[in-house]
Length: 413
Image (cartoon, rainbow, N blue to C red; front, side):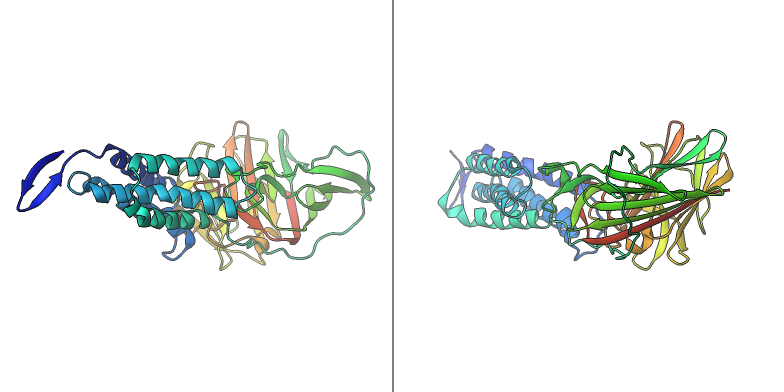
């Protein structure tokens, strides 16, 4: 409908509802995308493009399309078609790169693209806009692929034979610290969520990692030994002498494993009011599961940092302490009601961790972490060589193939 004409220009002010709806939805989506995923990456880092650059482009296109809706509806339509093409690019690139993830994800993305085209109104003249959108979508999908595994297996570890036989042991060991207080340690490498194609684990065809099972155990000369299999093969030797629990584990991964959650060490102290003092740092009180988490990590330079999240496990992060490790050993004192009751040494963890930026944490935090929480009646700690528990998202990161070692000493004080 012609509603105005002047100076030789005819203006069609008929509302273009479909294209405007497409633009508005994508503007909201870009804002959510921006706020939901981690920031603080270097400008040229791929996650800076994934979490900031691409949503910025989408948001600007959507905003421009809305501004042009009344006076230049043709440009609104072109913007809407560009945004619709985004989903075709995501679907095509995702189906090609992430073949082990659930196919319905890519079918759903293609369906969103079809709806967008129908709402925008197809015009042959706008095929270029659709093509540009496809290109942006390809980039948006491609940057979600996990970087190559960056853990550093030592290549050494205990080697011994354990006769196969009935075994229900999960690898957990216990040490009495004082009356009513125990520490439970599981030093096996356990993957809780995995991705076979390096995409987000929430879309994986097989979410859970291979369960760890014991294939045999034996006690010889006071040393308890076990053989386990999960995503890799593991052997464990442990003995308790004069209030000191010595653990030595060898882990063999034949191929890279990409995961969201995993643990290289799991520890529980069965008491309230537990605090942890990393060597060179003041003791810190673990947060509640829904509080701002406190955790430690090792930087590329080898320093250990204890930090606090802004909210739950999300950044930005406030450094509480920075200390230099002695011979690469992470030493932690366990305090119960203010009194030191045990010391835990992680002798191999720091030398094998992934120190590259975590895709979910941002703000300079790498993929390794020692996380700890207060739970009713206990303190729970998890150490990971490479994971994405800290931060926002279900991105996967890799453990390189090779032989890992995990020597842990728990000493009663």
